Length: 194
Image (cartoon, rainbow, N blue to C red; front, side, top):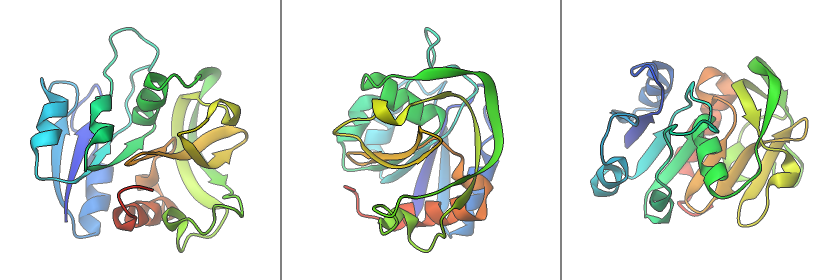
């Protein structure tokens, strides 16, 4: 399977952990620099690659001129996974309220998946609580998430996993833990529209 990874980081080339995780699944990986690619949306639309992952970033989503996920991609026949900053980009562009905490949260945490969502294909084979890793200052309160976005999992009242159209949005970094990598593998196998 071919996977495209869009590197949204200021310092390009730091997505090796996600690249290695996808290669471990037998995927062939193409990396595109999401900051310098002049026609990112068009490049992805014209690519034969159907599965795309947008990385996290050190940018602050609320700063003027920060890079954004091209929203028109979410109406294509491609499948997307938006990690951390990229999730923030999509939800902010959809008008979802974001908040900033006083300190940057970085490190491992355990997320319990609600009983109503434990059978969702994204969580197949993963024991709850999931052992995950995060690195973010911005967050979305659960109450800010509304239709057509579907909230699947949260941590301390913060949205951590959601779906929208052909896109899975995660506020954690799945490539850093065993549970997260299983989540990535499940993402590869779930239907395009979730």
